[in-house]
Image 1: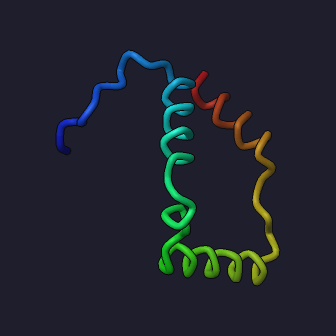
Image 2: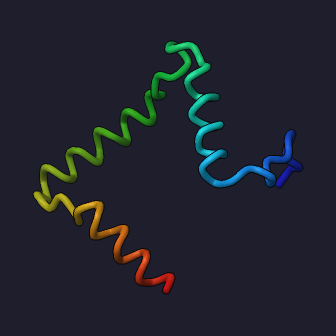
Image 3: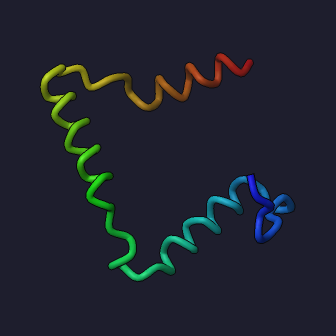
Length: 71
């Protein structure tokens, strides 16, 4: 892995997320569009969901289970 251009280690996780959001929002809309390969993957996943019918676990349950694993 190459060395980072800037050192963000002094930022909290929340500050890093905010920075990432600001960087993303600074891009022109035309550069935020998903690539065709990303769209293909989303279509594949949607088709798999519709074929399976299992929507997975609710987000709050997933977060709870992750928290329990870390304890």
